[in-house]
Length: 427
Image (tube, rainbow, N blue to C red; front, side, top):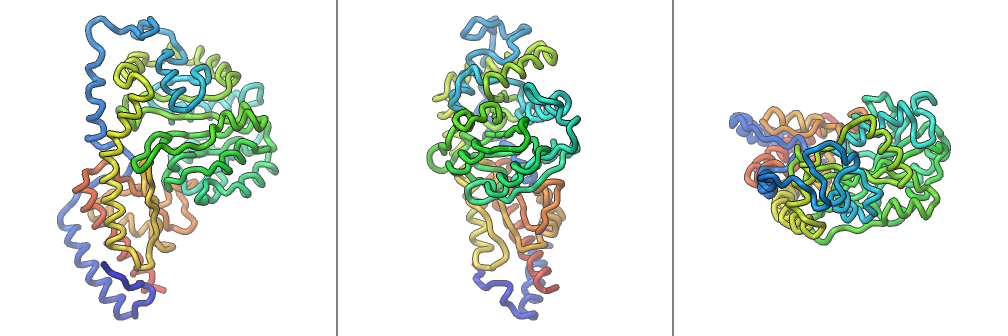
């Protein structure tokens, strides 16, 4: 393990070190690797855990426990048993849950689209009020930002802290601007930093006093049960906290089975106040004849109940734990003490957030790509893809095998070192 801080090396030492690193790097380039760490996709070993789901429906038995023929139309908000399973995961009532298709992202997009064109419950269309804005904690989830880009919504970055979004900034901005209509939140194992919002942060979010009466909190609870070190994190229930604070209709909660069962064939859901749910049901009546209830039935029969889901997640954790450990160990072995990077060590979620020294993220990702290791684009974790310090990189350990991860991380660490030395030498 190297221990010398790169910033303290002499010019000659930097040049020698850089030459040696490039020689090692070129050896990997010549291997023509093809390793993908670009997105948080489940690996084959994770997907295999749900293999029996594909054959769990057979014969003529397509009836839900409650007697619904899941082959037919209807059931706009999902079969009761699926609603109940999501309700147990989110700790709310089934009446506050609406089950959708396979993608929570699609449900978020749809909700933003309708609020833009028709407004929230009892509200005026957002797009008719002026230039719509969203608060975007950053680093954050790139697909949230892409939704805003699609609808030409102005994104206002909010710094993240170890407890969640900087609440002083959030409260100040919301109180002064009625065109801020939404805020993205990933409260448990945030994407990409793996932060769990503190109790105080959740309660301050619930008690917000936005200038816009039609402001909505987009609560993306994608990773609420994706813990692999220690017990499931418990944070205050945003729906209940908003009720206490007099903001019962503010939160819109989203989650899914996309990274629990099968990524392309899971089941998604959203939850909110009863009044909001009724408003959404009215839209669904126009929009669809009903969701894929056969997929819902597969999930109900396979998992059975909340305990079955949690048992499944413990198997998932056993697969993910060594993958994240491989990333952590390689980063520690290769980069600790060099003064050129910091990173998080999450206990759940799907990502590791990595920061180079300023101005080196794009160069690092480009070097990785040239050597056959595809990473998420540098800057993707910030609105409009613009990291003001060009330092954050999202590492996605879930898809490759442990062996592939070890190789990919060797290339990554070489790229980080080369980019850092080039930057320091130029200074």
